[in-house]
Image 1 (cartoon, rainbow, N blue to C red):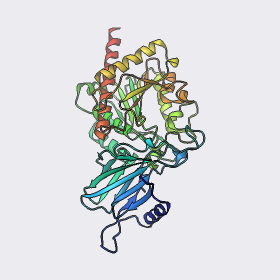
Image 2: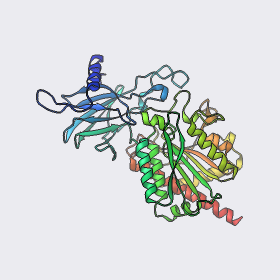
Image 3: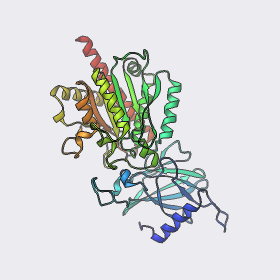
Image 4: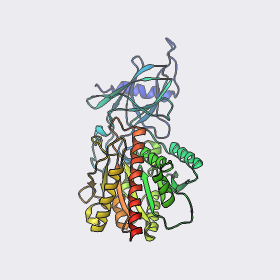
Length: 429
């Protein structure tokens, strides 16, 4: 695959800047393809638009100081019904800043080049392309347009606006659900979530389950896992009803709202990303807000389960848990955590496989390992609190909205089973 020429690239970018809607070919009056990423979560640097052959070339356009520039998401207009379209995506060329892994070089392209792209004809329902063809530093996807517009992305988008609307709909439909604002970001955006619990709202003795996604903004699949958790919680199963009646569940589908909104990666952002901010003086207000809640619940011995939702590397083929280093756990807490992992694995039935094997984020994992969420919560939570990170693969054919949501449902079933088991053990004592 030949990288488009600089001249062609400049011409394409200039043409894009001159018009935001499809224009007509003056010779045959055919509509012209226009690429647009000027919307929430959008990111694409247009390299070339080959009008004759229906071939678009782009690369991610994220600001590397705001995280790895792996994410891309754009809209194509000027299409005709059943028109064939080729989309070539090239590895990002932005240089990573000082102070992060890989500084002084571009991000490894594998993070930005999924085997299959995601597309939608309405910006709401997301599908997968056939497998793309890798060639050098790029990959080409082929698809046909069912209408005049297509939205095309690295993975299924989940913008702050879309998720806020979804949470409002769930709360309006179910009495056990209410929305809340966790914090306002440094850039003034709300970080929102849902609380799921039925019965007496004044009961301050229930165990608390906390789950959040997108400490790294580009990991959009984790927001769909969060959606699957909530959808299971409001469902009709006996286990879901038990969780609603006996616990308080909090789900925040995006923590790094600012970078999710601007189409930036979030991971390894400057001065550091959200999952390196769990310290006594956090940089991000939303992290401080979660810490405040964790401390309060832990003071009352109420925090039961804390799960941080992520997407891992391009080569990971199964979901898995990251756990805090055994160095920060007592033997009793290690035993509890192992039992939690056993129950979740036994009950899990998601479409994406889950391995029982875990990975540890201790001193050898990252210089700021002690400032990661699962470590901080393990160190500051009550003695029987479980704190883990679930990584769900993004580069599988089953890494779809449905697949991700099934992971969330499977996780929720496991959490329910673990807490039911713990409750019975406490009754016996």
